[in-house]
Length: 422
Image 1 (cartoon, rainbow, N blue to C red):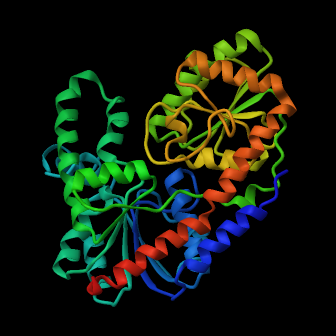
Image 2 (image 1 turned 135 degrees about the horizontal axis):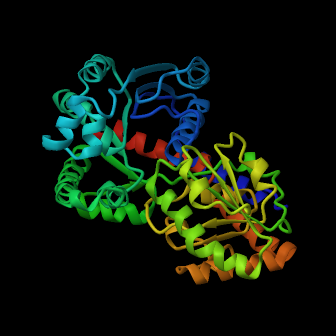
């Protein structure tokens, strides 16, 4: 197994460059960051944890569709200095439905917006002095923007995807007769996205590609705070490369992950099974539809659902298949697979935002046939695939540890703090 010595050296260099003045941070979220059932939650949790460990004092303001359970409250209060959680109204609430149809804001912003109590709590918080106000997601900005502008409060907006483009994946789930509404909502999101990106003092994307697209939309500079992985947590994993188990992990509330499963089971794995009938496809993740078991009854499919400790499945698997055709940003599930030493087969979309070398650190395919052949090739190689897997592990350790991401955020915090000196 590769050692993290090179990673430690690279991370140490970044940390030495960071400014470690403890800051008072107000951080808003449109969901609870624990448990980490999605890539977005995973990012939030690890950045909050890492920054708190560096001494920053964080007040976390959350609007959540889920009830705050006592164990979740205790876990998060062990990280942040103050936790404030307000309930989000139900999706089918009359106000939400009316806003979705008639408001100037796009559907996703309407679902998370028009929250008077949240706005009042935020306004009261702004009466205090903050070194940094951090807003996550443009679709969560609507309840805060008026107060931020009234106070002339500079803020950091972090976008995990180019939301106006990502929406296409969600709209595909809508019936054809709703196409006029889809076009209307896409227009609303492009307009809102431009306004939101322009309003922030600093904007952070998770990949250089997304940063470039956002910069073009808003005609402004956009910085990058990369997605990361807790490399130490996966360093002990030694996958079973002779197991014939092909692994996929995702949050299945997210349409691109559902599409990846459907493509894998409809087109990719049947080609694999034609030549390797003993291969198994293992699917883990939150919000797995029960209908899938009926649609794909093959006994070689393992429906695992949400798995709190992914390493238990990673160490029993032979490779990770990221058959992603849609989405944006960089994929935390892919980074975790790399950090665990799993050989990776992926589309270019699956490794977006990562500078991986095809053929050295992963195998690439763009069609069902190419992906199936890549899977078969790695299954045949067994232990010989470990060299590629360890190259992927080294990449994740050297380039994507959460400590690097936290240092990038601290650099943006300094820019906001010294905005008056520009």
